[in-house]
Length: 69
Image 1: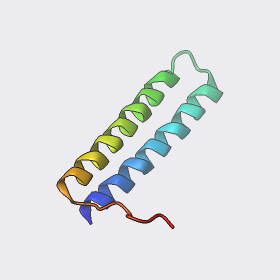
Image 2 (image 1 turned 90 degrees about the vertical axis):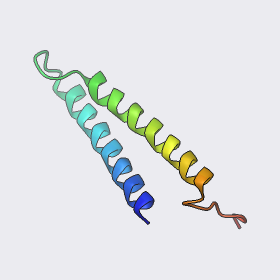
Image 3 (image 1 turned 60 degrees about the vertical axis):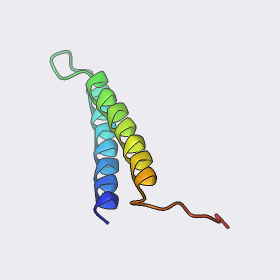
Image 4 (image 1 turned 90 degrees about the horizontal axis):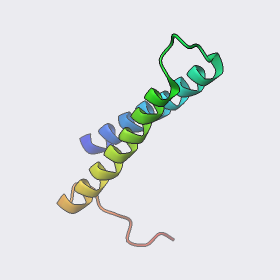
């Protein structure tokens, strides 16, 4: 159950960074943080989510749905 909570928190963090990048893009402030900072965090978070899912599948913490229909 804790792995699912961690995954949900990481997804929320990824979406938050997406909106922060949009805010930085819309402001276009040369003194503010660049948009690539937030996009980089988003990419790193998505990589962490995929790795965490693969590790959880390999260790048996989560089980895939055997029949999708």
